[in-house]
Length: 112
Image 1 (spheres, rainbow, N blue to C red):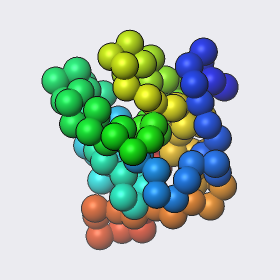
Image 2: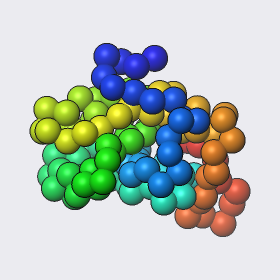
Image 3: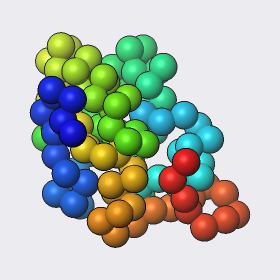
Image 4: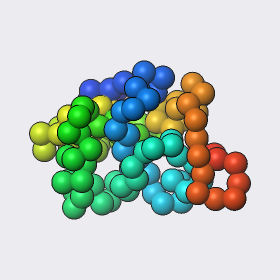
């Protein structure tokens, strides 16, 4: 489900890729990909310079829970001239293909 934007499957995201998680703080805290950068969707416009810096060595891989919010952010970033790819299926797909999760809580990581 590419939502009409450049996309990549969760299992194809390179291990050293720039990964931008646009979910809300509670979703992030419950479980996220190690090494991801957290910028909630509502802060993307004001923090686009930070995101542009993430894309200095290659495309930013944008992820959310299922792929809808990240597709919107990917489209916005493309309009800003930032190379970005939507991670199809979001964190659900990330977890399903066995990619590691970490948590900011005292509980096992989970996708909210």
